[in-house]
Length: 191
Image 1 (spheres, rainbow, N blue to C red):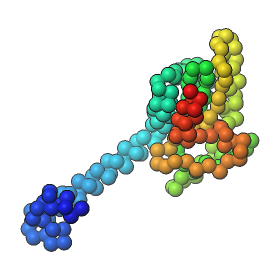
Image 2 (cartoon, rainbow, N blue to C red):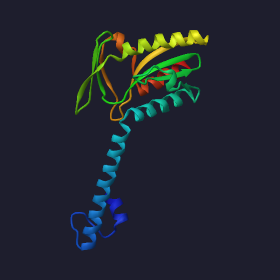
Image 3 (cartoon, one colour):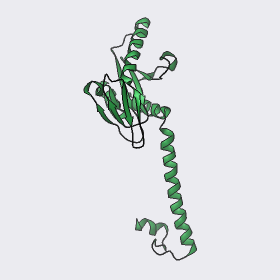
Image 4 (cartoon, rainbow, N blue to C red):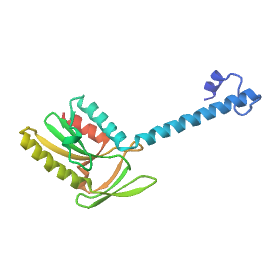
């Protein structure tokens, strides 16, 4: 660190500021660092939205499937929740994206799940039950359209941008709940 400061400011030592110019330069460096940190935190907050989580999940899907996927538009998806429906070669993924909270606790048949982070905790309806309804709807639509698919998969994807999720779920629920990295691995393995 000293070498970098010496190269940038050759006559300046941090513990002995001699002139007004050195104090101003030191203050500007500190203020610049604080400003960069503030901008970075604002960017993180802005990305911690349903739209930001959706972008992160789509980016992971695009990367894992090498661009060989299709997002099914919102008009063909049931109203109310806006899950993410992805068509991969031979498969249909029905995803419920959780954008806020990285500690997920619940069970496969419980009515409520607890989703929390360091600052708050809230209860949400069990997303697996809603995804089962989506599965039935998708099956009916595919049967009506006579579209062959090998399988329909339902996953809850935890896409908080602050931390990797930790799960306290029973075995039945855990096989349907993934982090973004686990979803990426699942798609690569499937391909």
